[in-house]
Image (cartoon, rainbow, N blue to C red):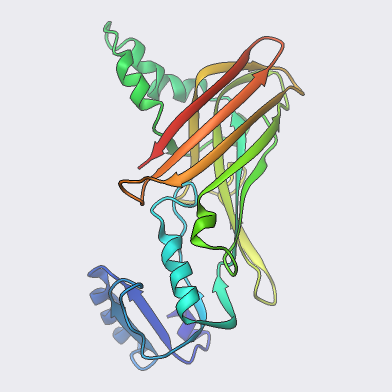
Length: 268
């Protein structure tokens, strides 16, 4: 309805769930029946009454940007229907990583299993630490710089680009402990006369995407200026491509601690 109100000649609204029925009623109530056509079905299976469209708008972003694989569908729609030099909203996305001190939450979620009312349930800790935590991270908990690990230009990227591997180098900005790594993303709308965007960073205004935390198996003791090197890779899970398999390699040689470890996570 915003697109129609802004002057779109016609809008095709697509959703594969039954919510499209309520959408049709809302369109009618607000007087847009002549300008908005609601279509129920998967983008990969439907037929549009036109050959091409000028603009594609989709809120495809998930936790860790790529969770649930909705971007695959947007790229399919782009390749099938978008006119040359057409517009995508949003059209750019960048994911970042940084290090955090998070002793309290790690203790509540992970180390808790070491002593559950006097019982050692540490085998469950091995499972818990493999599940990234989606939660709000206090900006004060960030103890390093942030670096980009994925750049996506939706006008040119391919499905294969959504599986990635990226090196990172983080510099500690104070003496502290590191309990995990945090990923967040930013999206931009650059194909308009006044480009704009938004961030899901711990330093930005709250969004429902929050941040994604990868707790490390051991706590690092870091001094200001020390370097944490590593690699993060991400691929869709082979059994359920809506889930993500994420591997993190951490290399650290500090004054008070060291780590050379690989950690496998699954976002589901």
